[in-house]
Every structure is written in structure tokens, then in C-alpha cells.
Length: 261
Length: 334
Image 1 (cartoon, chains in turn purple, cyan):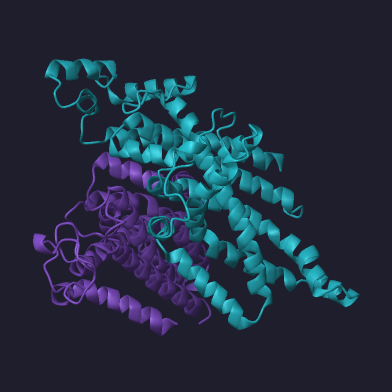
Image 2 (tube, rainbow over the protein chains, first blue to last red):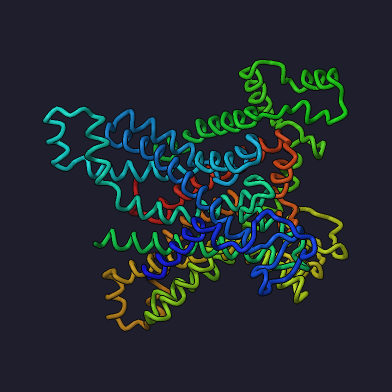
């Protein structure tokens, strides 16, 4: 299981990194003679309304998706991590206030908030990343807080404080590194779901814009021609599916092993 | 217990205020100029200015916010530029369609998910693993993609199911007492419309159910396994009860508590985003489609209104879930 998931994830990352090598055509180059050709030997996934090779576009789309997943994850974990750690460490009033704030953000149905933010900032991948980050940090705040609460009571923390270390050092140099296990597993699973959310925003028109080959945008473009050129929507969707499955399985396996290890 | 309830209900107030504040900020942070958008491309600068004054956009932000809150208190959510209707009227008009979709989805989830979960908890390991893996696979499918696949296969290729909308034009119901089409077709006596309505629901509901099925199965399985470990199950078996009765009459009933409370979260997921894309793909005339069209048209009053309403509903559902938990499990006391 772990092996399969790892191979899948590595393949996805590899296709992003090696996109120029893997893609037989430039994802943006149009060729009107070959428009709407179904999958064949020359164009593995067929071509779209402008004659662009879909396989190349999907491969390059991996870069966009992974970029979105990575950035949103980093920002969400940073914000959530800082808030959760501070709340868990200090406890008391600080904890209450920060957790209330987190609860308020938790109250928002995620996609609505992401859509509203993306709508007001304007379409585009950068704004999609901002929108998703604004929504995705809340579970991490809770996670970090929970972890910090359990690690905080251990003796080495008491020792560090006794030696005279500042709160900041204790928090970030000692407590945090010991919290990472379950959070890391969750983060891995989340990459897949962040990519899915980014694709959903792209599908609705709020993520990457054409001609950018983001998967959600590709599915949306293909929707117009669904009846005649089914491959335009099918293959990008398949890519999303495989990515989510890969990272979910990997995260699941990591979770199981780290918890019972 | 009453104190807990009171605290939770009181919490609704700051949450609602925060929601209005956040949605207000979001829609005012925009780079585009709403007055310009409302006036259109051909309007001259004086008209745009006039419109800006009419919309109250020339006042400082905090005044605008206070005015907005005052409007909300009156039940006035503003008007939509696109439909030229008060937002409240639009929301009331489109909400039943979304609610119907969500409720039927929940019903199907329960009807399929719980038995499947029970099945995986009690059968051989190989069947268990197979069902669980398939469920996880299904949940990984992007909902919007699955919806498109359904549309392609079952409408374009097989012509088994209708592609769009709630009802075909021949079947239009003349009177809509409840706007819930299933109920309406029964109430008004037009039973012929019922199969039509149900057929239209198959694809959207299936796409939505697929998104959460694995989670329901997993929850049921975990809860049931936990119950089956309890002492009273051993007693029941020792009494000579058939395995079936032990399962159905005792273990399953007790394990339903966490599952039922989870249903609230599923509803939240549905209303929070999943229905949006499904409504878009199937042209289902609900809140989701309304919100998406408003977003695409940069029509801010509906965006604020729907965000506000959906969030408040979400909060209330979570609150009900928490409350129901205390009722269902008498041992929990706050």
C-alpha cells in the first residue's frame, strides 16, 4: 500500500518536474489542422478546440496543481501552526481568544468563503492560493494546539524553562519539532484535497485562467464540447482523481505507521 | 445542560456578526468598482458618480457597514444587479431546490452508507477491505468531474436520464405550494410528474452521494465495531439471540449516535460547496447556481447574502448536531 501510494505520488511530482521532457508538444501551441482529434498515437489524450495537445497540457498542469497544493499547505500550516502553538502554550485567556477566532473561521463553509474571496480579489491562481489559505488554516490551528498541549507537560519542557529559555525558544525549538508526526500525515493527505479544491475553483472560473492548463480549468473548457469531444474533460479529471488518491493513500499510510510505530 | 445550550446559542451572535463583517470586507476589498460595473460600459462619468451616490458607496466604509447591518436587521439584503430582484426574494425562491437536493442526498447516504458500513464491520476481511477501498476511491473523485461523467454516460450516450433541470418542460407543475418538487407533485395530485422529478434527481444526487459515501461507511464501521466490543453484546449472544438480532436490535442502534451527529457535518459539506458545482453542471435552479452566477457577474449583494445565509445555516446545523448528541446519549452531560 505504502509502496503503491509512494510510487504514484513520485510519478506525479516527477511529471511536474520533468514536464518539458515528458510533454511531446508545447502546451500552448495551437494547430488548427488537428483540432478536436480524439486520442491517438500522435496525441495521447487528443487535442482541444485550438488544436493544442491535451497530454502536454495535462502534464504541465501538474506543475500548477502542485504549486497550489504546496503554497496553500505551507501558508496554512504556518498560520495555523503559529496560532495553535501560541494558544496551546500559553493557555488561559490567550487560548480562549485564539480558539474563538478559529471557531469563527471554522463556521464558514469552506468553498463559499474561498469563492467569495477569489471573486472579490479577481480570478487568477495567486488569488486562488490566498483564498484557499484563508480557509485551510483552521484545522491546523486545532491540530497544533492539541499536540502542543500534550507535549507541553513533558519534562524536557520544564527543564528548558528552568534553564531560563525564553518562551519563544521553548515553543519553536523544543515543543514544535516533537509535534510533527500526525500533522505531517495530515498535511500529506491535505495536498490532494487542496489540489481538488483548487481545481474546483478553476472549474468555476476563479482559479487559473485560460490558456493556463490548470486541471479544473481544462475540465471546464472541455465541458462545452462534452458531447463530441469527451476526452477534453475526462483526462484532466482523471489526473485530479489520481493525484487525490495518491496523496490520500500516502497520508493514510503515514498516519497509520506514525501512530502505531 | 441549559447553561451549555445557552452558551452555544449565545455564541451564534458573535459568529454571525463576524460573518457579516468578513463578507462585507471581502466584497469591499475588490479592485473593481461596483458602481462602474453596475452602470455598464457605456455610462459616462457623471452617471457612474450618480450611481455611486445611490448605492451609498461614497460614504466611508464603516458607515457603509453600519447601513448594511441596519438593512440586515430589517430583512433587507439588498438587491441583485443581475436579476433586479431583492436578494431575499431570490434566496427564498431558489432555496427549496437546494434543500430538496441536500435532503434527498442525505437520505440516500444513510440508506446506503449505514448498511454498507454494517456489512464491512461484520464480514470477512477481504470483503471489508474491498468495500472500503472502493469507497475511498469513489470519494477521491472530484465531484464536478463525476457529475460530468454521469451526464456524459447516462444522458449523451445512453439517453437514460435527463441532463438538466429539475423537471422537463412537459411536466411543469402549475401550482407550487411548497416548491419542493417531490412534495408538490404529491400534494397537487399530479403523480405523473413524480417519476419525472425523481429521474431528474438521480444524477445530481448520485454525484453528491459519491463524495461522502466512504466517510459514512467508515464511520458506521468504526462505531459498530466499537459497540460490538461492549459487554452487553456478549450478554445478548449468551442469551441465545441470533447474530442478526444482536446486530440490528442492539449494536446498530447504539452505534447510530455518533453517525447521526456526523450527518450534520455531511450536510455542512453539501451546503458548503458541493451543491454549488453540481447545480452548475445540471443547471439545477438552486442557491448554488444563483451564487455562482452572482460571483461570475461580480454581483455583490447576492454574494454577501448567500454567503451569510449559508454560513448561518451551517452554524445552526452544527449547533443542532451538538445538541442532538446530548439527547441521544443520556450519559453525556455538560
